[in-house]
Amino acid sequence: MAKKRYEPKSPISDNFFIPNHSGVRKDSRISNLPHAYGGFQDKSEELTIALQNTWYKLTNAAHDLFSGDESFAIGFEDDEITMEDSGDYFGVVSMTLTGDNAVDYQLRVYNITQSKVMGYKIGVTTKGAGNFSNITLPLYFDSINKGDRLRMEIQNISNAKNPTFKNSVFYISYLHE
Image (tube, rainbow, N blue to C red; front, side, top):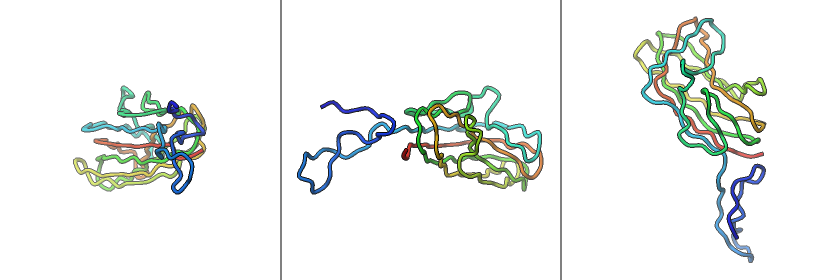
């Protein structure tokens, strides 16, 4: 029997086994789950913060800051992520940035399609130009619909000073319906 490819609502392939079961034994695995891995490396992208306590899309002038190095059923365009299947997803994003000393920033993921924040926001205080600060955000996307578009957003809660982004890496994976 040919192996089935991933289909939404049924992420476990038809090749599985149940230990100590008298039936046919097959390999136990999950195949072709929606996932994405990517980021950016060795950049020096200054994001303009015009107003304090205002969320801004994390992008560059060409809208190609992030790359999707590997993905299945998750698309990338204009520094936005398009979810090609519904369900709940999890992952992590980590970024390195610099900025003026003692300036506080917050990072979040925003669902453009549903007009809502996905999961929690997390903050970091920069330590002066040239000193790297790291921010890591665990990701949990609840109730994603097919076609939802997501973006990373940042705000400065101290003043209107700009951060400069250096590196980032992210991973997102399907969890369940």
